[in-house]
Image (cartoon, rainbow, N blue to C red; front, side, top):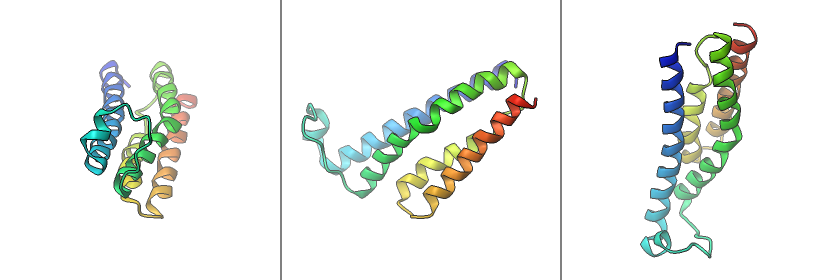
Length: 125
């Protein structure tokens, strides 16, 4: 992985995090209106289903994010191949937001498998 590829991978990961926050925020505002969105949020909002799904997707993101953020510099330092976790991680937010029962665990399995393959790129460059 070159310096440029490493930088682009980290930037892409940051964009994914921002997309999570932005999608959830926009869906919540659409579901509950401006009064709740601009207020102190002392009382939890009860969003519609799509906004709730995006809320859960946002909460799920920190489960795998630290693993990928630990693997990326390790992979780069080891001179390993490109990370393989990206396709699965990119598929998870839309799967969470869709609400489809089997799609979400399938995407989780793909993302977790990608993280494991990326780990092999560190251990077996």
